[in-house]
Amino acid sequence: MPTISDKGLRMPESPIRKLVPYAEDAKKRGAHVYHLNIGQPDIKTPQVALDAVKNNTIEILEYSRSEGSEEYRTKLANYYKGRDINIAANNIIITTGGSEALMFTLGSITDTDDEIIIPEPFYANYNGFATASGVNVVPVVSSIDNNFALPPIEDFEKLITPKTKAILICNPGNPTGYLYSKEEIKKLASIVKKHDLFLVADEVYREFAYDGAEHYSILQEEGLENHAIVVDSVSKRYSMCGARIGCMISKNKEIINTALKFAQARLSPPTFALIASEAALDTPQSYFDEVIEEYVERRDLLIDALNAIEGVIVAKPQGAFYCIAKLPVANTDDFARWLLEKFELNGETIMIAPAAGFYSSPGMGLNEVRIAYVLKKENLIKAVEILKAALKEYNA
Image 1 (cartoon, helix red, strand yellow):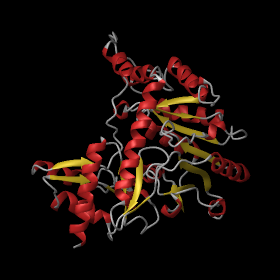
Image 2: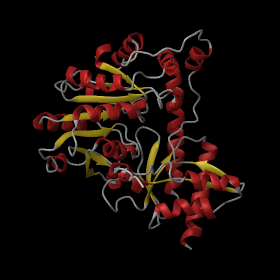
Image 3: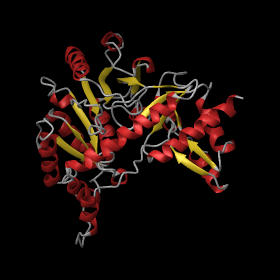
Image 4: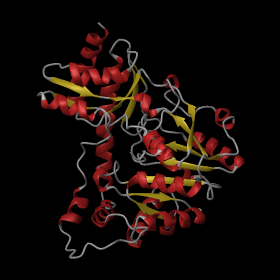
């Protein structure tokens, strides 16, 4: 029998999606499942984006340009300029989601067995993208004790080797919700310039910054023109996860020219999704104001409710719509499965994402979960009530 590739065998399962069969079984037996496990907002997609597709009169669904249409990239550059990020259309390559932007980035800056330093916990798919690219993730540990702030810069420096090619951050963070300050970005800028590395920032949650804090992009930092690569996406900003449109941005022309070859190899991003994404740029600021207000209310409600459960420790997010909570259980993988297989409260249960999959260090995050507060407030209240009752029964 032919053998599966070692790379394929090493590809990690998604900690977010691997429990789906258990959730489906729970639903089949009649239980209602509250999904706290995945960042699928229940916020409506802007009508202007939906109408652009609905009212379109295209008769031939042609290939788009590999780098995305010039019209969209120009309009997107103007969006960034409105946020104090001075870039041009030729600094942007449109991708099939932020995921492809990360794959193009890794393909453009790394070779087999090169290393990328990432503060953990981090978006679980970074492990998968690294494995697919033959790259080694070198984690630098951040802690729930200080809300997952940037680890000391000395911790990064001692991990740098001749194989190190980049530092990768997610800002605001998935799964932590941590928003890096301008001072923290400047520290990272200093170290990548000192060691001639790339600084890659996944900024897909840029719009979601709370409590008066402002997002500071690595593209706003002077002197990083040859080092900075930003990954972005329409998925969360406009609640358009299914569109699968993202982009990679860099002022380094060599990076863009190299990434374009990867873009040409996959031909083009999807045409209808490009049309929707271009139209979405006309979304009024009032949409974001309302969405941010809603997420702040959800966050505050969730954090207060979690803090009221004995034995639970939770970090307060300053952005995105996730938090990491430490639970009074030994293994949240087992607990998450038990919730779906064996526990119900009034015919309802919850699906959570065990946090070990958001680490690459063995043994880390075993008693932590990521919770996405993408449900309506009344459903979040019910979900936390279920969690409280479940912990009591599980630990009994």
